[in-house]
Length: 124
Ligand SMILES: [Zn+2]
Image (cartoon, rainbow, N blue to C red; front, side, top):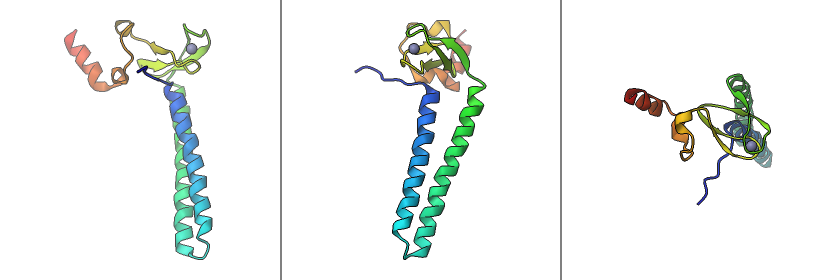
């Protein structure tokens, strides 16, 4: 089974998109309960919460974008942004790494975790 990987920023972006979508959906459900004021209010607040949260996520993407490294993908030769030690190309999902020691190894999200970094530091 091939490992399907997509860029972190793309992933967060689609998460934020679905959060807005979900929020609107929840608010719409609220409209179905017009007769029950408290229930409608509950759904409205919940929906607004989702939309608010996605605004936070979009803001977070903006913050993360300042920490990304702009590189040219070796596979599709388009400029892409990398976040962390390992990430995938935003255009073709080609796994990329900043760390020479990880080159050629199987792509794994664990290379970004703090624990893994600590372990490799102890070994060297
Ligand atoms: Zn690419």
